[in-house]
Image (cartoon, rainbow, N blue to C red):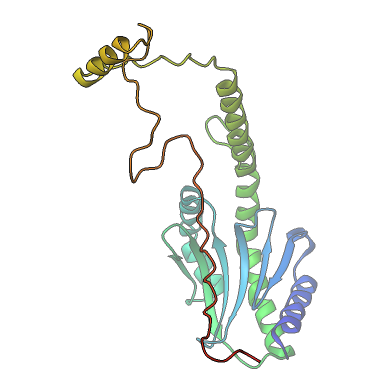
Length: 245
């Protein structure tokens, strides 16, 4: 049996075997994984068929913010003996990554048939039954805004509101007028050039840093667009002697 039909069979067995007070839930299949959550996708149950390691993982994953993940760990660490007795000695509570944690157990991966699907559904159902009450209670409490603590959706809305308010304040702020920079004192060459121009009949208010309109050799005059020099076509070479036929 392929992975997707097998996971769908596990989900059907799980829905028929769990009591109605544990539902409704949200279920989704992603490649070789079956995930179930109660409104917060970051905190979900997961069945993962690991073909490389030859194991099937059944766990409760906490992939929320690090502070909340540590609170979830503290909640279920206090019930460690009860959970080990109900789910077996292979159950582990560990830090999966730098910020994510998980409560999980693994079983050997066998051929994907109806018998193995029924076994996984029974173990998965016991995991959900032992932890769903605390999980649903914690998710509801986390969704209620408190003083200084907001739900993820409320934090995103507050962030967008702050950004829009700062943008409006920036656009309404009066702009300062540009302060002209003081000009440097004319050099001695500029003064001599001015005297020569006045002696030649130029008005007295001519610019002291007057420059000649003739461009310097090797330099392009400022303010003019650059001209692209296209290569000239080469002239045809005339063949002396006989004419081309």
